[in-house]
Image (cartoon, rainbow, N blue to C red; front, side, top):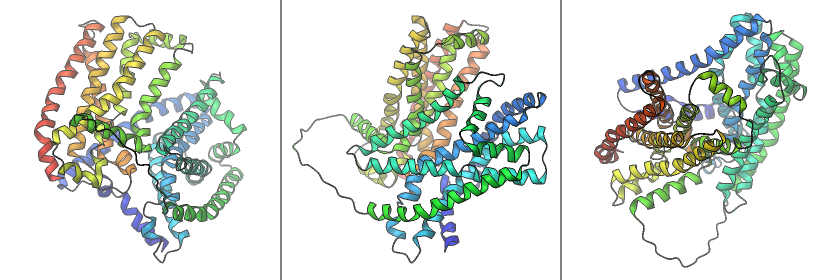
Length: 526
Protein backbone atom coordinates (compact mmCIF):
# COMPACT_ATOMS: atom_id res chain seq x y z
CA UNK A 1 0.00 0.00 0.00
CA UNK A 2 2.93 2.32 0.73
CA UNK A 3 4.13 2.18 -2.87
CA UNK A 4 0.60 2.68 -4.20
CA UNK A 5 0.33 5.83 -2.09
CA UNK A 6 3.68 7.03 -3.44
CA UNK A 7 2.39 6.50 -6.97
CA UNK A 8 -0.72 8.59 -6.21
CA UNK A 9 1.22 11.40 -4.52
CA UNK A 10 3.84 11.37 -7.28
CA UNK A 11 1.21 12.52 -9.77
CA UNK A 12 1.17 15.91 -8.02
CA UNK A 13 4.81 16.40 -9.03
CA UNK A 14 4.54 15.58 -12.73
CA UNK A 15 5.28 18.28 -15.31
CA UNK A 16 1.68 18.53 -16.55
CA UNK A 17 0.29 18.70 -13.02
CA UNK A 18 2.75 21.36 -11.83
CA UNK A 19 2.49 23.65 -14.87
CA UNK A 20 -0.92 22.67 -16.30
CA UNK A 21 0.08 23.09 -19.93
CA UNK A 22 -2.69 21.42 -21.91
CA UNK A 23 -1.96 23.04 -25.25
CA UNK A 24 -0.06 21.80 -28.28
CA UNK A 25 3.19 19.85 -28.21
CA UNK A 26 4.92 22.91 -29.63
CA UNK A 27 3.87 24.95 -26.60
CA UNK A 28 5.22 22.29 -24.25
CA UNK A 29 8.50 22.04 -26.16
CA UNK A 30 8.95 25.82 -26.03
CA UNK A 31 8.20 25.80 -22.30
CA UNK A 32 10.68 22.99 -21.65
CA UNK A 33 13.26 24.88 -23.69
CA UNK A 34 12.75 28.05 -21.63
CA UNK A 35 12.98 26.11 -18.37
CA UNK A 36 16.17 24.36 -19.47
CA UNK A 37 17.66 27.67 -20.61
CA UNK A 38 16.88 29.33 -17.27
CA UNK A 39 18.21 26.36 -15.31
CA UNK A 40 21.36 26.22 -17.42
CA UNK A 41 21.95 29.97 -17.00
CA UNK A 42 21.58 29.69 -13.22
CA UNK A 43 23.83 26.63 -12.95
CA UNK A 44 26.50 28.18 -15.17
CA UNK A 45 26.46 31.40 -13.13
CA UNK A 46 26.95 29.50 -9.87
CA UNK A 47 29.35 27.14 -11.61
CA UNK A 48 31.64 29.95 -12.72
CA UNK A 49 31.72 31.39 -9.20
CA UNK A 50 32.48 28.07 -7.47
CA UNK A 51 34.91 26.92 -10.17
CA UNK A 52 36.95 30.10 -9.67
CA UNK A 53 36.86 29.58 -5.90
CA UNK A 54 37.87 25.92 -6.26
CA UNK A 55 40.73 26.86 -8.58
CA UNK A 56 42.08 29.37 -6.06
CA UNK A 57 41.77 26.94 -3.15
CA UNK A 58 43.46 24.15 -5.07
CA UNK A 59 46.49 26.38 -5.71
CA UNK A 60 47.03 26.77 -1.96
CA UNK A 61 46.11 23.14 -1.26
CA UNK A 62 43.03 24.11 0.74
CA UNK A 63 40.32 22.51 -1.43
CA UNK A 64 38.88 20.97 1.71
CA UNK A 65 37.34 24.32 2.56
CA UNK A 66 35.04 24.07 -0.46
CA UNK A 67 33.31 21.13 1.24
CA UNK A 68 32.22 23.57 3.92
CA UNK A 69 30.20 25.41 1.27
CA UNK A 70 28.87 22.08 0.01
CA UNK A 71 27.67 21.22 3.51
CA UNK A 72 25.95 24.57 4.06
CA UNK A 73 24.37 24.70 0.59
CA UNK A 74 23.10 21.13 1.00
CA UNK A 75 21.14 22.37 4.03
CA UNK A 76 19.78 25.67 2.71
CA UNK A 77 17.04 24.43 0.39
CA UNK A 78 15.93 21.51 2.64
CA UNK A 79 15.68 23.85 5.64
CA UNK A 80 13.57 26.44 3.78
CA UNK A 81 11.37 23.86 2.05
CA UNK A 82 10.74 22.00 5.32
CA UNK A 83 9.90 25.21 7.15
CA UNK A 84 7.25 26.04 4.54
CA UNK A 85 5.94 22.56 3.78
CA UNK A 86 6.17 20.39 6.90
CA UNK A 87 3.15 21.80 8.71
CA UNK A 88 0.79 21.32 5.76
CA UNK A 89 2.38 18.13 4.43
CA UNK A 90 2.99 15.83 7.41
CA UNK A 91 1.13 17.41 10.32
CA UNK A 92 -2.08 18.90 8.90
CA UNK A 93 -3.21 17.02 5.78
CA UNK A 94 -5.64 18.91 3.62
CA UNK A 95 -6.95 15.57 2.35
CA UNK A 96 -7.19 13.91 5.77
CA UNK A 97 -10.98 13.74 5.67
CA UNK A 98 -10.60 11.68 2.46
CA UNK A 99 -7.78 9.31 3.42
CA UNK A 100 -8.74 8.79 7.09
CA UNK A 101 -11.78 6.51 6.43
CA UNK A 102 -9.82 4.35 3.96
CA UNK A 103 -8.47 0.95 5.10
CA UNK A 104 -4.91 2.23 5.13
CA UNK A 105 -2.63 2.40 8.15
CA UNK A 106 -1.99 5.96 9.27
CA UNK A 107 1.72 5.19 9.53
CA UNK A 108 1.84 4.33 5.82
CA UNK A 109 0.09 7.58 4.91
CA UNK A 110 2.45 9.58 7.10
CA UNK A 111 5.60 7.91 5.75
CA UNK A 112 4.39 8.24 2.13
CA UNK A 113 3.78 11.97 2.55
CA UNK A 114 7.12 12.43 4.32
CA UNK A 115 8.88 10.44 1.57
CA UNK A 116 7.45 12.61 -1.21
CA UNK A 117 8.34 15.81 0.64
CA UNK A 118 11.93 14.67 1.12
CA UNK A 119 12.30 13.22 -2.41
CA UNK A 120 11.27 16.55 -3.94
CA UNK A 121 13.61 18.30 -1.53
CA UNK A 122 16.54 16.05 -2.50
CA UNK A 123 15.94 16.38 -6.24
CA UNK A 124 15.91 20.19 -6.12
CA UNK A 125 18.88 20.28 -3.75
CA UNK A 126 21.00 17.93 -5.89
CA UNK A 127 20.32 19.99 -9.02
CA UNK A 128 21.46 23.19 -7.33
CA UNK A 129 24.54 21.45 -5.91
CA UNK A 130 25.77 20.21 -9.30
CA UNK A 131 28.02 23.25 -10.01
CA UNK A 132 29.64 22.97 -6.59
CA UNK A 133 30.16 19.21 -6.89
CA UNK A 134 31.64 19.55 -10.38
CA UNK A 135 34.01 22.31 -9.25
CA UNK A 136 35.26 20.27 -6.28
CA UNK A 137 35.75 16.95 -8.06
CA UNK A 138 37.31 18.60 -11.12
CA UNK A 139 40.29 19.62 -9.00
CA UNK A 140 40.16 16.93 -6.29
CA UNK A 141 39.50 13.97 -8.57
CA UNK A 142 36.88 11.30 -7.94
CA UNK A 143 36.76 7.56 -7.39
CA UNK A 144 33.84 5.14 -7.17
CA UNK A 145 34.22 5.04 -3.37
CA UNK A 146 34.25 8.85 -3.13
CA UNK A 147 31.16 9.05 -5.36
CA UNK A 148 29.11 6.74 -3.14
CA UNK A 149 30.35 8.36 0.07
CA UNK A 150 29.36 11.79 -1.27
CA UNK A 151 25.94 10.51 -2.32
CA UNK A 152 25.28 8.96 1.09
CA UNK A 153 26.46 12.00 3.02
CA UNK A 154 24.30 14.36 0.95
CA UNK A 155 21.28 12.17 1.70
CA UNK A 156 21.72 11.85 5.46
CA UNK A 157 23.33 15.21 6.34
CA UNK A 158 20.13 17.32 6.00
CA UNK A 159 18.08 14.96 8.21
CA UNK A 160 18.70 16.66 11.57
CA UNK A 161 17.96 20.20 10.30
CA UNK A 162 14.86 18.84 8.55
CA UNK A 163 13.65 17.32 11.83
CA UNK A 164 14.32 20.60 13.65
CA UNK A 165 12.56 22.70 11.00
CA UNK A 166 9.62 20.28 11.02
CA UNK A 167 9.02 20.91 14.71
CA UNK A 168 9.50 24.67 14.25
CA UNK A 169 6.98 24.60 11.38
CA UNK A 170 4.59 22.59 13.54
CA UNK A 171 5.04 24.94 16.49
CA UNK A 172 4.36 28.02 14.40
CA UNK A 173 1.33 26.43 12.75
CA UNK A 174 -0.05 25.15 16.06
CA UNK A 175 0.42 28.45 17.91
CA UNK A 176 -1.20 30.29 15.03
CA UNK A 177 -4.44 28.43 15.73
CA UNK A 178 -4.46 29.88 19.26
CA UNK A 179 -4.60 33.51 18.14
CA UNK A 180 -7.41 35.46 16.60
CA UNK A 181 -5.02 36.82 14.00
CA UNK A 182 -3.31 33.45 13.54
CA UNK A 183 -2.22 34.02 9.96
CA UNK A 184 -0.50 37.31 10.84
CA UNK A 185 1.23 35.59 13.77
CA UNK A 186 2.38 32.78 11.48
CA UNK A 187 3.78 35.23 8.92
CA UNK A 188 5.67 37.20 11.60
CA UNK A 189 7.16 34.03 13.11
CA UNK A 190 8.29 32.71 9.72
CA UNK A 191 9.96 36.05 9.00
CA UNK A 192 11.70 35.92 12.40
CA UNK A 193 12.99 32.38 11.76
CA UNK A 194 14.31 33.26 8.28
CA UNK A 195 15.96 36.47 9.47
CA UNK A 196 17.38 34.53 12.42
CA UNK A 197 19.03 32.01 10.08
CA UNK A 198 20.50 34.85 8.00
CA UNK A 199 21.69 36.71 11.11
CA UNK A 200 23.61 33.68 12.42
CA UNK A 201 25.65 33.51 9.21
CA UNK A 202 26.13 37.30 9.21
CA UNK A 203 27.53 37.39 12.75
CA UNK A 204 29.73 34.37 12.06
CA UNK A 205 31.22 36.24 9.10
CA UNK A 206 31.69 39.38 11.18
CA UNK A 207 33.53 37.44 13.86
CA UNK A 208 35.92 35.82 11.38
CA UNK A 209 38.90 37.55 9.82
CA UNK A 210 41.29 35.43 7.78
CA UNK A 211 42.81 34.95 4.39
CA UNK A 212 39.87 32.75 3.54
CA UNK A 213 37.56 35.77 3.51
CA UNK A 214 35.54 34.99 6.60
CA UNK A 215 32.69 32.79 5.33
CA UNK A 216 34.89 29.76 4.65
CA UNK A 217 36.51 29.79 8.07
CA UNK A 218 33.24 30.60 9.84
CA UNK A 219 31.69 27.48 8.32
CA UNK A 220 34.49 25.33 9.71
CA UNK A 221 34.27 27.05 13.08
CA UNK A 222 30.70 25.76 13.25
CA UNK A 223 32.04 22.18 13.34
CA UNK A 224 33.18 22.85 16.92
CA UNK A 225 29.54 23.13 17.91
CA UNK A 226 28.05 20.76 15.32
CA UNK A 227 30.18 17.56 14.92
CA UNK A 228 28.20 16.19 11.92
CA UNK A 229 29.75 19.00 9.84
CA UNK A 230 33.23 17.64 10.58
CA UNK A 231 32.09 14.08 9.84
CA UNK A 232 30.62 15.29 6.54
CA UNK A 233 33.86 16.95 5.40
CA UNK A 234 36.18 14.18 6.61
CA UNK A 235 34.07 11.45 5.02
CA UNK A 236 34.29 13.05 1.56
CA UNK A 237 37.75 14.62 1.67
CA UNK A 238 39.62 11.73 3.30
CA UNK A 239 37.24 8.86 2.41
CA UNK A 240 37.00 8.37 6.17
CA UNK A 241 34.60 5.44 6.64
CA UNK A 242 34.49 5.92 10.40
CA UNK A 243 33.25 9.50 10.00
CA UNK A 244 30.72 8.21 7.47
CA UNK A 245 29.56 5.60 10.00
CA UNK A 246 29.16 8.25 12.72
CA UNK A 247 27.18 10.49 10.35
CA UNK A 248 24.89 7.77 8.97
CA UNK A 249 24.21 5.95 12.23
CA UNK A 250 23.45 9.08 14.27
CA UNK A 251 21.17 10.61 11.63
CA UNK A 252 19.34 7.40 10.73
CA UNK A 253 18.64 6.65 14.40
CA UNK A 254 17.29 10.17 14.94
CA UNK A 255 15.21 9.87 11.78
CA UNK A 256 13.66 6.57 12.91
CA UNK A 257 12.86 8.08 16.31
CA UNK A 258 11.32 11.05 14.54
CA UNK A 259 9.09 8.85 12.36
CA UNK A 260 7.78 6.64 15.15
CA UNK A 261 7.23 9.51 17.61
CA UNK A 262 5.72 12.01 15.20
CA UNK A 263 3.48 9.56 13.34
CA UNK A 264 1.02 9.36 16.26
CA UNK A 265 1.27 13.11 16.83
CA UNK A 266 0.41 13.67 13.17
CA UNK A 267 -2.69 11.48 13.43
CA UNK A 268 -3.80 13.28 16.60
CA UNK A 269 -3.32 16.73 15.08
CA UNK A 270 -5.20 15.81 11.90
CA UNK A 271 -8.11 14.37 13.88
CA UNK A 272 -8.20 17.49 16.02
CA UNK A 273 -8.01 19.66 12.93
CA UNK A 274 -11.33 18.29 11.69
CA UNK A 275 -13.12 19.75 14.70
CA UNK A 276 -13.09 23.51 14.38
CA UNK A 277 -14.98 25.69 16.77
CA UNK A 278 -16.08 28.94 15.23
CA UNK A 279 -17.65 31.74 17.21
CA UNK A 280 -18.83 34.99 15.75
CA UNK A 281 -19.97 38.15 17.38
CA UNK A 282 -22.75 39.87 15.53
CA UNK A 283 -22.44 43.62 15.55
CA UNK A 284 -23.99 46.39 13.59
CA UNK A 285 -21.93 47.85 10.78
CA UNK A 286 -22.11 50.89 8.59
CA UNK A 287 -22.49 50.62 4.86
CA UNK A 288 -19.63 52.44 3.20
CA UNK A 289 -19.57 53.01 -0.54
CA UNK A 290 -16.27 52.35 -2.28
CA UNK A 291 -15.27 52.03 -5.89
CA UNK A 292 -14.95 48.62 -7.51
CA UNK A 293 -11.20 49.05 -7.80
CA UNK A 294 -10.81 49.90 -4.10
CA UNK A 295 -12.92 46.91 -3.15
CA UNK A 296 -10.84 44.58 -5.34
CA UNK A 297 -7.55 45.95 -3.97
CA UNK A 298 -8.81 45.41 -0.42
CA UNK A 299 -9.72 41.85 -1.40
CA UNK A 300 -6.18 41.32 -2.69
CA UNK A 301 -4.72 42.54 0.60
CA UNK A 302 -6.96 40.14 2.54
CA UNK A 303 -5.90 37.26 0.29
CA UNK A 304 -2.23 38.23 0.57
CA UNK A 305 -2.11 38.26 4.37
CA UNK A 306 -4.25 35.12 4.69
CA UNK A 307 -1.61 32.93 2.98
CA UNK A 308 1.75 32.91 4.85
CA UNK A 309 3.68 31.29 1.99
CA UNK A 310 2.39 34.06 -0.31
CA UNK A 311 3.70 36.77 2.00
CA UNK A 312 7.05 35.01 2.52
CA UNK A 313 7.76 34.56 -1.19
CA UNK A 314 6.41 37.82 -2.59
CA UNK A 315 7.13 40.03 0.42
CA UNK A 316 10.42 38.78 1.84
CA UNK A 317 12.55 40.89 -0.51
CA UNK A 318 10.65 44.06 0.36
CA UNK A 319 10.92 43.35 4.10
CA UNK A 320 14.63 42.64 3.76
CA UNK A 321 15.11 45.91 1.85
CA UNK A 322 13.39 47.96 4.54
CA UNK A 323 15.40 46.28 7.31
CA UNK A 324 18.63 46.88 5.36
CA UNK A 325 17.71 50.53 4.90
CA UNK A 326 17.06 51.05 8.61
CA UNK A 327 20.17 49.06 9.50
CA UNK A 328 22.30 51.25 7.21
CA UNK A 329 21.72 54.13 9.63
CA UNK A 330 23.49 52.25 12.44
CA UNK A 331 26.37 50.38 10.78
CA UNK A 332 29.71 51.50 9.41
CA UNK A 333 29.45 51.75 5.61
CA UNK A 334 33.12 52.47 4.94
CA UNK A 335 33.59 49.14 3.14
CA UNK A 336 30.57 49.90 0.97
CA UNK A 337 32.05 53.21 -0.18
CA UNK A 338 35.39 51.50 -0.93
CA UNK A 339 33.64 48.91 -3.13
CA UNK A 340 31.67 51.64 -4.92
CA UNK A 341 34.84 53.59 -5.63
CA UNK A 342 36.48 50.45 -6.98
CA UNK A 343 33.54 49.83 -9.34
CA UNK A 344 33.74 53.41 -10.63
CA UNK A 345 29.95 53.82 -10.54
CA UNK A 346 27.68 56.32 -8.85
CA UNK A 347 26.32 54.75 -5.68
CA UNK A 348 22.72 55.59 -6.64
CA UNK A 349 23.17 53.56 -9.87
CA UNK A 350 24.23 50.49 -7.90
CA UNK A 351 21.35 51.07 -5.50
CA UNK A 352 18.95 51.34 -8.46
CA UNK A 353 20.11 47.92 -9.65
CA UNK A 354 19.57 46.44 -6.19
CA UNK A 355 16.14 48.06 -5.98
CA UNK A 356 15.25 46.61 -9.37
CA UNK A 357 16.02 43.05 -8.37
CA UNK A 358 14.12 43.48 -5.09
CA UNK A 359 11.13 44.80 -7.06
CA UNK A 360 11.22 41.73 -9.31
CA UNK A 361 10.78 39.46 -6.26
CA UNK A 362 7.39 41.07 -5.51
CA UNK A 363 5.61 39.17 -8.28
CA UNK A 364 2.07 39.08 -6.87
CA UNK A 365 0.33 39.86 -10.22
CA UNK A 366 2.02 36.78 -11.72
CA UNK A 367 0.17 34.44 -9.32
CA UNK A 368 -2.79 36.35 -7.82
CA UNK A 369 -5.22 35.32 -10.59
CA UNK A 370 -4.23 31.67 -10.15
CA UNK A 371 -4.86 31.91 -6.40
CA UNK A 372 -8.54 32.53 -7.11
CA UNK A 373 -8.65 28.82 -7.89
CA UNK A 374 -12.04 27.21 -7.62
CA UNK A 375 -13.57 30.54 -6.56
CA UNK A 376 -12.80 32.11 -9.92
CA UNK A 377 -16.37 31.49 -11.09
CA UNK A 378 -17.55 33.98 -8.45
CA UNK A 379 -15.46 36.75 -10.00
CA UNK A 380 -16.70 35.82 -13.48
CA UNK A 381 -20.30 36.03 -12.29
CA UNK A 382 -19.90 39.55 -10.87
CA UNK A 383 -20.74 42.60 -12.99
CA UNK A 384 -17.07 43.54 -13.12
CA UNK A 385 -15.03 43.75 -16.28
CA UNK A 386 -12.10 41.36 -16.62
CA UNK A 387 -9.92 44.38 -17.27
CA UNK A 388 -10.85 45.81 -13.87
CA UNK A 389 -10.01 42.53 -12.15
CA UNK A 390 -6.56 42.40 -13.73
CA UNK A 391 -5.85 46.07 -13.06
CA UNK A 392 -6.82 45.70 -9.40
CA UNK A 393 -4.19 42.97 -9.09
CA UNK A 394 -1.64 45.27 -10.71
CA UNK A 395 -2.59 48.20 -8.49
CA UNK A 396 -2.35 45.98 -5.41
CA UNK A 397 1.27 45.13 -6.19
CA UNK A 398 2.05 48.82 -6.78
CA UNK A 399 0.41 49.84 -3.49
CA UNK A 400 2.26 47.02 -1.71
CA UNK A 401 5.71 47.74 -3.17
CA UNK A 402 5.91 51.47 -3.88
CA UNK A 403 5.65 52.80 -0.28
CA UNK A 404 8.34 50.40 0.98
CA UNK A 405 10.59 51.24 -1.96
CA UNK A 406 10.19 55.00 -1.49
CA UNK A 407 10.68 54.86 2.29
CA UNK A 408 13.81 52.72 1.85
CA UNK A 409 15.23 55.14 -0.72
CA UNK A 410 14.52 58.07 1.59
CA UNK A 411 16.42 56.33 4.42
CA UNK A 412 19.31 55.36 2.13
CA UNK A 413 19.56 58.99 0.98
CA UNK A 414 20.73 59.86 4.49
CA UNK A 415 22.92 56.83 5.25
CA UNK A 416 24.60 56.88 1.82
CA UNK A 417 24.67 60.69 1.59
CA UNK A 418 22.81 60.88 -1.73
CA UNK A 419 22.15 64.22 -3.35
CA UNK A 420 18.58 65.43 -3.81
CA UNK A 421 18.80 64.88 -7.58
CA UNK A 422 20.10 61.32 -7.23
CA UNK A 423 17.42 60.53 -4.66
CA UNK A 424 14.65 61.76 -6.96
CA UNK A 425 16.08 59.88 -9.95
CA UNK A 426 16.35 56.73 -7.88
CA UNK A 427 12.70 57.09 -6.85
CA UNK A 428 11.63 57.73 -10.45
CA UNK A 429 13.35 54.69 -11.97
CA UNK A 430 12.21 52.47 -9.10
CA UNK A 431 8.56 53.46 -9.55
CA UNK A 432 8.83 52.96 -13.31
CA UNK A 433 10.10 49.42 -12.67
CA UNK A 434 7.37 48.68 -10.11
CA UNK A 435 4.62 49.66 -12.56
CA UNK A 436 6.20 48.04 -15.63
CA UNK A 437 6.98 44.72 -13.92
CA UNK A 438 3.50 44.65 -12.37
CA UNK A 439 1.88 44.90 -15.81
CA UNK A 440 4.22 42.28 -17.28
CA UNK A 441 3.55 39.88 -14.39
CA UNK A 442 -0.22 40.32 -14.79
CA UNK A 443 -0.01 39.37 -18.47
CA UNK A 444 2.06 36.29 -17.58
CA UNK A 445 -0.63 35.09 -15.18
CA UNK A 446 -3.35 35.92 -17.69
CA UNK A 447 -1.79 33.58 -20.26
CA UNK A 448 -0.40 30.98 -17.83
CA UNK A 449 -2.95 30.54 -15.02
CA UNK A 450 -2.91 27.57 -12.64
CA UNK A 451 -6.47 27.30 -11.34
CA UNK A 452 -6.42 23.65 -10.29
CA UNK A 453 -4.28 23.14 -7.20
CA UNK A 454 -4.43 21.32 -3.87
CA UNK A 455 -2.68 23.99 -1.83
CA UNK A 456 -1.35 27.47 -2.38
CA UNK A 457 2.29 26.31 -2.33
CA UNK A 458 1.78 24.84 -5.81
CA UNK A 459 0.83 28.28 -7.15
CA UNK A 460 3.28 30.41 -5.20
CA UNK A 461 6.39 28.24 -5.70
CA UNK A 462 5.74 25.75 -8.51
CA UNK A 463 3.55 27.46 -11.09
CA UNK A 464 4.62 28.88 -14.43
CA UNK A 465 3.36 32.28 -13.32
CA UNK A 466 5.74 32.33 -10.34
CA UNK A 467 8.67 31.10 -12.44
CA UNK A 468 8.17 33.47 -15.37
CA UNK A 469 7.21 36.35 -13.07
CA UNK A 470 10.56 36.16 -11.28
CA UNK A 471 12.64 35.49 -14.40
CA UNK A 472 10.96 38.12 -16.60
CA UNK A 473 11.10 40.72 -13.82
CA UNK A 474 14.85 40.19 -13.46
CA UNK A 475 15.18 40.30 -17.25
CA UNK A 476 13.54 43.74 -17.31
CA UNK A 477 16.00 44.98 -14.71
CA UNK A 478 18.94 43.41 -16.56
CA UNK A 479 17.76 45.12 -19.78
CA UNK A 480 17.81 48.47 -17.98
CA UNK A 481 21.37 47.73 -16.85
CA UNK A 482 22.45 46.79 -20.40
CA UNK A 483 20.99 50.03 -21.82
CA UNK A 484 22.86 51.99 -19.15
CA UNK A 485 26.11 50.18 -19.99
CA UNK A 486 25.75 50.75 -23.74
CA UNK A 487 24.90 54.46 -23.52
CA UNK A 488 26.98 55.67 -20.57
CA UNK A 489 29.75 56.84 -22.93
CA UNK A 490 27.29 59.14 -24.72
CA UNK A 491 25.17 60.56 -21.85
CA UNK A 492 25.93 61.44 -18.28
CA UNK A 493 24.56 59.25 -15.53
CA UNK A 494 21.66 61.53 -14.54
CA UNK A 495 20.29 62.05 -18.06
CA UNK A 496 20.67 58.35 -18.81
CA UNK A 497 18.73 57.34 -15.68
CA UNK A 498 15.97 59.76 -16.66
CA UNK A 499 15.90 58.33 -20.20
CA UNK A 500 15.66 54.72 -18.98
CA UNK A 501 12.83 55.70 -16.61
CA UNK A 502 10.91 57.31 -19.49
CA UNK A 503 11.45 54.19 -21.63
CA UNK A 504 10.06 52.04 -18.82
CA UNK A 505 6.94 54.20 -18.60
CA UNK A 506 6.49 54.11 -22.39
CA UNK A 507 6.76 50.31 -22.37
CA UNK A 508 3.77 50.18 -20.01
CA UNK A 509 1.49 51.43 -22.82
CA UNK A 510 1.54 48.26 -24.99
CA UNK A 511 1.20 46.01 -21.94
CA UNK A 512 -1.74 48.09 -20.74
CA UNK A 513 -3.30 47.65 -24.18
CA UNK A 514 -2.93 43.86 -23.94
CA UNK A 515 -4.69 43.84 -20.57
CA UNK A 516 -7.49 45.97 -21.99
CA UNK A 517 -8.04 43.95 -25.19
CA UNK A 518 -7.34 40.36 -24.12
CA UNK A 519 -8.58 40.05 -20.53
CA UNK A 520 -12.26 39.49 -21.31
CA UNK A 521 -11.56 36.91 -24.04
CA UNK A 522 -9.17 34.90 -21.89
CA UNK A 523 -11.47 35.07 -18.85
CA UNK A 524 -14.26 33.45 -20.85
CA UNK A 525 -11.99 30.51 -21.68
CA UNK A 526 -10.93 29.89 -18.07
